Length: 361
Ligand code: UDP
Image 1: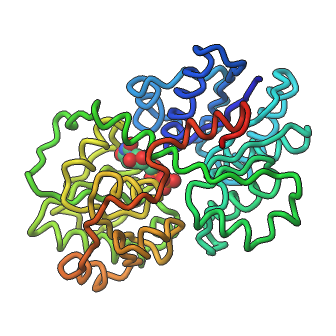
Image 2: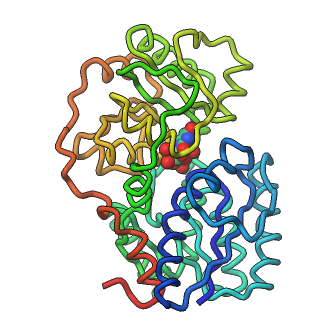
């Protein structure tokens, strides 16, 4: 069996890394499975891409398309064209796509037009906010996928509520668990303190990169102002996404109390999550990682796809409301019983590869 894996953005390297490890493990045990990796170039700089392949033992891409730093349309269109060429040449049995980026959608469109079956890892997630580019990408990708790997029961329910059986009668919907938990468990042992960063014993770990925050000056100003106030009493470490960095550099927001650094590699990030007191983020992946590492999380968004974290009291939604962020930081009570199994317990990659090979029962 030949699989073409499409990845291109930071969270996809992490997700596809876990599945790649399992594919190699099965191939070493004699299974007929072989992977060709395409890196679209959506994230292309040292801190957002190269470091992940180097330190995370992810197989090097077979194809690098170099399509990054463009508008949504230009990026997705150019990716479709290039991926189509590769698929025509490679003739895979499956195309695997991850998550909800433009690379995901481009892979899904290119494969569907060539009638190549698509396996979507992280199927069924919904924010119910169609202004998010990610929401458009995930809905369209789910529609053309034959194997829909849902990380959570909520994702499975979303697909059922949308009538997946009617729009894709032959599709196979599988509750696989979340491959990010596999990665968190694997890399925890390898975590390293970020070199050159002075970090207190108690600190808040924060990331901001969602377009709904970075592209809205009022939301971004509220978030930065809340963080800067909190940082007067506790260190706030902010590994900054390039998009957020360039917007903050062009603004006059007061960030004087924040510990701002370039994006860090995953092994450093895992160390930060493991050692912080609390996570504040608009990232999807980091909300779950907070749970995996038993940390409370305040989410800087109005809604989340990872609703089970909110329903069970591990995560509080603050949006971009300064007063609410500060109120939750000082006053919120979080669930501390992290024994709840919400994401498959680290067996998602095995389930996914077994399903591709034979069925995951
Ligand atoms: N991450 C990282 N270094 C950083 C910031 C984030 O390794 O400086 C990791 C983070 O731990 C998570 C993933 O990148 O595993 C999340 O990516 P991102 O927030 O870009 O995307 P999202 O999950 O929101 O799609």
